[in-house]
Length: 376
Image (cartoon, rainbow, N blue to C red; front, side, top):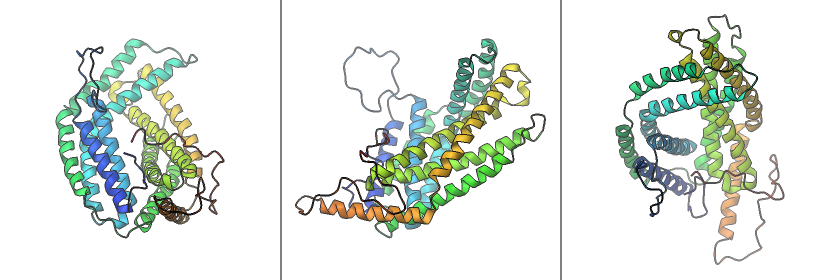
């Protein structure tokens, strides 16, 4: 079930319906997966299903991932999809119902990763294990009380996604062909470019004086701007991934770069949330807390430097020409597919599309960047 175009799709509308249906069906299957049995005999036979043994944490993560994919998909055809506002709101609401559980998981994971990174640096003074355990407990207990049980929320989400999946079978996308996605593709790319500019400005406005009462707040504003940028970059990566089959040798590396940038910005946001949580006044000026916050700031600074440089390259092209280029490649791909259909004759097709002015030529050996559909 690839999150991308396939030659079997008769139209872009069919592509949208198929991808949405597959992602939602998988989400429902994962939501209702049987939790792992701690008493099960690993030597016992029996073939496990793809979703068998998912933990509650994994089910929440998978649900949110599928929802984001479908929202990214319909954002791509937003101007051509009359029911966009309704369906996007429905998907958004389901995602929000799961958000507290996912955010709690991310916060603890970020804490554990930061502690591991600190301890791996032999140049830093050692952390007291008792202090780390106490600080972690201060995070875990309130989060557990706030989020409550996830199982009822997961089941409610599955029920709502089933209703959306049923409606997706008859979604209408107009106009047809490349015009269905061109405007939405350009809009998302343009939003990512603007979000990067805003992120640069907020980073420049950070108060670096640790004694300043505004220091923490300016850092938080910058983190929020980077988080918004991440959302736009992720949506752009999703759109490229869907279109990748029109010229995989050229587009797959772009997908890989955009997804890597989104991952880095995601880690930046997790660190910002962690600093905000452990930086609460009621936790006191504890050496362990201060040491971890300092390391978090250092790691954020490293991410900012690489992200801004990568983002400048990924988003260097203006939005309208970028969308027009993908329109042309989509039409070429469709024409080649019709030529290659069974029963057709003619000259053999080239291994990849010809060079497109204003873009780069495919490398001689092409190759997939590793961003296929293994995690579809």
